[in-house]
Image (cartoon, rainbow, N blue to C red; front, side, top):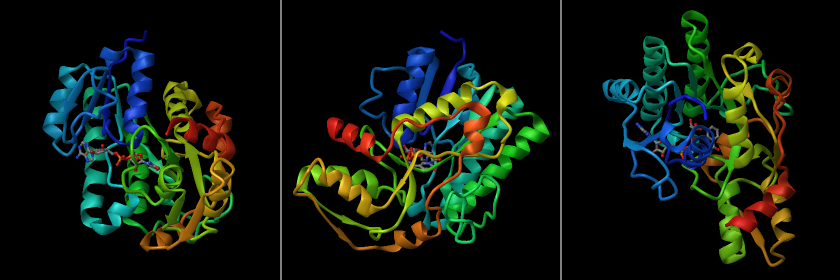
Length: 312
Ligand code: NAD
């Protein structure tokens, strides 16, 4: 067991639950403090320490970090893309201030490592859509994407200026079955499995040929931990790495689901989320992550679909 003491902020979300459980396995249950605004998630109960925390309260966050001798922080609290468009100023405020609170305390207290996720949402309609490169035109049009891009710049700034060891990934849309998604544009790819199983039909809020980069949660958790475990000398990107596994459209995932549930049907009723998706890449080039710290995905659409139906 390692001596690190980890704080996960936003531990009850889609990523937080699984990441907390994975970190507890690696570092020991008592060494991973889970925290969130919400009540403790069912799957976390009894698995390790839990504290109620509003990350916007910097003083409380500071006290918590000192009291628990925290050496690593994973900041997952955020307002996601679809929810963010409903209240842009709030999304900007929460997404920025939470990160600045964490980075500033990390600098003051010499925290060993900080993890904060970015997103494919940093890209915009002027970015190349296919195999979007690591370094390219970045002109996000959603407030979520704008806050992620600004966050990336802050991460790099705190690393270069103050030596804070902060690491980040541009996650694609994440598909999982343990904890529900929190208001993103790729949530359809989770909902579709539940609706297929329960009602054999699904109405997609994205059009049939909308391709987006996607990833199965076990790959995302492994990528996060591998990035955080990598030797600092291997991390050449201090803003956020492109990260990729697969790319598919609602039509393609529906066809894959039909292999398991032949009666399954899909309808398309695009809503405001279509416009968000249209500004994002179809697929991502993550060759830098693969070269720098050895990233390799395991799940493609077929393997993920099989595993989802085994578990939901
Ligand atoms: P989520 O919405 O499921 O979870 C976020 C958690 O943060 C929630 O449990 C919420 O209660 C908590 N939270 C919100 N405000 C808080 C506050 N003020 N103080 C403490 N906790 C607070 O989100 P997620 O999908 O788990 O995403 C985690 C991170 O990964 C976010 O930064 C998100 O932008 C990023 N990301 C997610 C995806 C995805 O597909 N899920 C894709 C790209 C990037």
